Length: 336
Image (cartoon, rainbow, N blue to C red; front, top):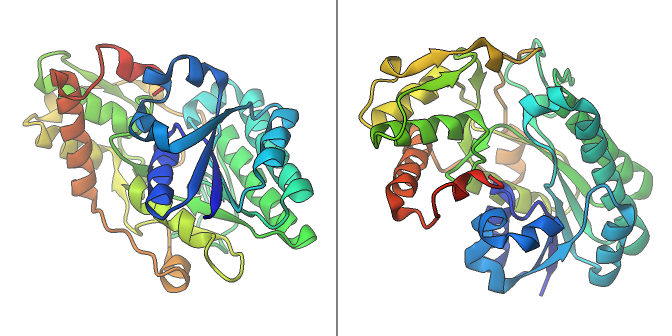
């Protein structure tokens, strides 16, 4: 039985990945912050249904010793490093902790694996934000990086650090440069989930408006279930390579808004307030990925379309806020 460890197991991607690995017969371990163990119903709500099938370990990305000790005990076969401060807008507010936590956490895990489990296959969760405002579209593995946020900078550094460990030490270490991927498990602070929540709550008479910033920003949106499958496939290859994972099609925030509100039986124009406080200091206007390498090398392609994704998110939030989602009022906000 293969043994895998997931940092960020309580997040959107971590929860879907844990399910996939369990289905494939893995022994699954997750790294969580201690606060998650103290408030499991809210902090671990995405994995409550599999808690009896995974083993959790308390550690901090800012503590090399805690990560070192976990890896020393486990000696895993595969490591999926997903944990990060991942909200782009917040990274502008606290750029120091974003860069420090994201880069040091990655470095600590790689260093511990090199010393204790060099045979372990390592996956780093990169991001399309590494591309920022590059003049080339779509972007692929050879596109130069031009990040436009502290978050993007931290992910660029993580990709390069992972590459360095692969080339310098011969480790099976790869980065998945994943474009935007969403689901009903997306955090409430992200624009897609903010939209699906607003559509649900307005349709139920719980709110009246939604405030958003740049409606013309375009992103390549896919479903997180598809994207974690790509993560797993990357670690099953004979040779380590980095891969772009994307659908190859872009939609605007306005398109997402329209699809979500239409699904809820609403006209978004009757509820929208454009608020300039939600604009980024350095805007990224369009990101579109070319996943040809993943298609040819991994046999990977997305299975969930844009409207199917939006409808699933809205339907889930309508169920949540109408009392059919399994959480008490307010719990959806905590640790989301």
